[in-house]
Length: 461
Image (cartoon, rainbow, N blue to C red; front, side, top):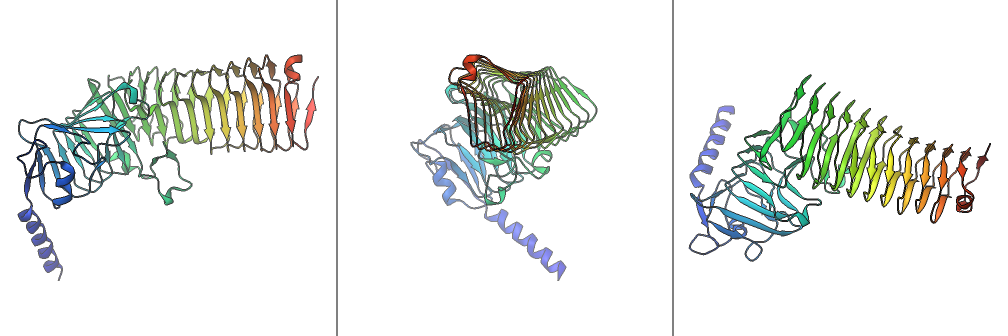
């Protein structure tokens, strides 16, 4: 019976090969199909689509172009087909296993390619961000919940590769997620099983490093993807104008130091599912997110900076981690933390942001010795964060200096409030509040608003 079953499977494979067909696609006419969308609706698994030169845009194609059959899509010999997607819409979504894409040029305005099937091959393709206007949230290639991608000979201009878990679904509840689109990735094989060789990002090699332990990595690269490294130091890298400049996943005791990752579409420096890692003296300016850490334990961000980003620095599901001596300047939200526990921020300069820091649903977060200056919404805001403490900080020239709402065990000690423009301190709905030895100028003392806060202990020496 087992031998018969194996024979049947072999015959099935042979039949599949026998019936595979080759078709041409030519938007100028003269091919089997005039659009890739039309061809994909008609062909079968195993078929080959050869694309003639020309532009495949929304005048003929339906975007995103969904590839949901195990086919090969390749440039015809000597041709350069250009797939030009409209704004906000991915060019290609490769949604099943075993797809092969070869020789295409993809020009996009937000997202080039989503790879969501296993054992996909992408080779000799060029992916380019069509306009700097669309850099924010842009990504050349999302590899999302996929395993064993083979990426060879590809060129990324103004973009790069982002590794992530599968798209968010009902089963994602309680898991770390990113960008409102994908899970961070609960299976390490989403990160470790790929083959990426001879690819470039902005003219430099795409660095894909797996299981590098106890080394010092200084090789120039346009982008770094480092996975499951232990005790390794990455130093002196410049990975700017890319989707994710530096991505660390499932790393332990790893250091990223003296690196620059400016103008990122998604994250300048991104650390996920990692423990005991350190980011030191790094800069990530003008990104959608500058420095972003998710699902981490005992990590430190030391002496780093982010200026002009949509979100400067970010902790999500971070535990026992530290942000120290950082410059967080003129961002949308300077620093945001949520869904973690026992994290600490010390000696940071938070200036000129729309919202300086926002601590939300984050127990036992402590802020010490920080300066909040000229933040034009709020300097330090916390909501639903029991055990929140702010100690020894200076608030100067903020619209609202500090705000704490609906938390238990809020503690303000030894802070200085000066030249607040609208409100020095706003509190509502907190319990067991302790305010000890804080210093307010006379003008700021008149701008304190505390309501619905039982068990308030207020003491000034």
